[in-house]
Every structure is written in structure tokens, then in C-alpha cells.
Amino acid sequence: MSLEEAIARRRSIRNFAPEPLSQAQLSQILWAAQGISDTQGKYRTVPSAGATYPLEVFVVCGENSVEEIGAGIYHYNRDSHSLTLHYKGDARLELARAALAQAMIYEAPVDIIICAEYEHTSRRYGDRGERYVHIEVGHAGQNIYLQATALGLATVAVGAFDDEQVREVLRLDKQYKPLYIMPVGRPG
Ligand SMILES: Cc1cc2nc3c(=O)[nH]c(=O)nc-3n(C[C@H](O)[C@H](O)[C@H](O)COP(=O)(O)O)c2cc1C
Image 1 (spheres, rainbow, N blue to C red):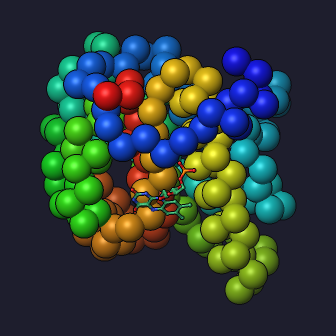
Image 2: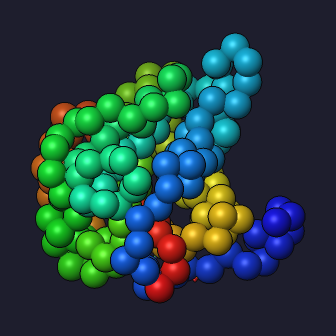
């Protein structure tokens, strides 16, 4: 699919088929969200103010959500393009409850959560760093939208949730602030 077609076709989709994603599909989505895109491992698929890179990506999977990946909360390691199990078990229902009970978060096989460590950017840019982090998460979200569209998958950017509850569901340290939840799956 051309970039123009992906932009034209991109839509927020809130209905998901109860079918697993392939590892290749999840891998491609994560790479688009925050993967490394140069040979030195210095730059990523998403622009970042001063290359300060404040974003961290987590994945919530149910059982049989992704082929050969168990239910759990995973951290995306962009350097090795791999996932590390952060917490075992299906957290999708808890996550949906923390997001005004938006059912698609529970129904999608996978939820991508983009979090920020503001300190990475505010250390260099002071108060203006906050603005830069928010702009940057928009870039990452759009990459996920366009990559999902190009793969024939569905997603929606979710910003309505209780920050603290989401942080607790994901068992994240205080420095991580969740900014977007993006359920991903095959369209229902
Ligand atoms: C910052 C932001 C927050 C959003 N939060 C939600 C949300 O919590 N739940 C939801 O269903 N859609 C959410 N959306 C998706 C919008 O509703 C959607 O983009 C809008 O209706 C336009 O539709 P389109 O994306 O299909 O073009 C959000 C979009 C943005 C940019």
C-alpha cells in the first residue's frame, strides 16, 4: 500500500475480530511506533526533540492474542527489537476499566501503551519539554495508525483514561506516564 493510500484509508476502528495477530504483524507495529531506523542504533522511526527519546512502549496481550506469545504485559526493547515479559497474565480487562470501560481495549487481542519519561526531554528543554513530549507521542501514534492500515489491521488512539490507574495496572514505576493506549487487531 502506498503512503498516500494508507493516509487516505486510516480510520479509527473500534471493533476487533477475536483472532490472534501474527508475531510479524506485532513486530512491524512496534517497529513503526518506536523502532530503530539507522545502522548505528541512534535514531528511531519517530522524530524526537533533540533526539532525547522520552517514549517507552508496552504491550498488553491476552492468551492467544499473538501467536506463541503468552498473556502478559511486555516492554518493547527497541535496541534489540524484542519484548521482555514485565508481568504475567491478561491485564486487558483491568486496563479497559482504567479507561472509562472502553470495551475495545478488552476486545482487541493487543493493546499498545505509549508512556513517557518526561525527564529525558525536560532535562534539556525545561518546561518546554512537556510540549515536546506531547507532540512526539502524536508522531508515534500516527505511525501506529498508518502501519496498522498498511497491514490491513485496525486501531484507535485512546486518550481517555485515569493515568494513575493505568500506571498501576501496568505495574509501572512513577516516572512513567501513560499517554496513549492503542488497541490493535484484525478489524471485526
Ligand atoms: C488525543 C486523542 C484522544 C483520543 N481518545 C479517544 C478515546 O479515548 N476513545 C476513542 O474511542 N477514540 C479516541 N480518539 C479517536 C478520535 O475519536 C478519532 O480520531 C476521531 O473521531 C476522528 O476519527 P478518525 O480517527 O477515524 O479520523 C482520540 C483521538 C485523539 C487524537
